[in-house]
Amino acid sequence: MSESTFMGVPRAKISWAPVIDYAKCTFCLECDKFCPHKVYEVNREERRLIVAHPEHCVVFCRACSKTCGPDALSFPNKAEVTERIKALRKEGA
Image (cartoon, rainbow, N blue to C red; front, top):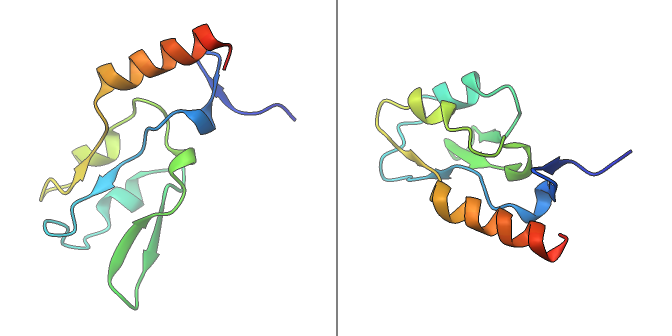
């Protein structure tokens, strides 16, 4: 089985996943319900959503953040990630 890649770069080398601002998160879980890629895990005891599987996040997808009313999700800078991917490709990732 081949390793998952994006633009010819191993997905594991690409830093792209949501970041949760817990000061804003209301634990509505809309992002978790929306995301089909199982990026999140829910800790019901602590009422906390966790980005448990960042490697499952589709590179450059931000769709879950559009479901977030309190705007508690953010993503890395797309231009910076794109440049990093290009650099990795040149290095032969």
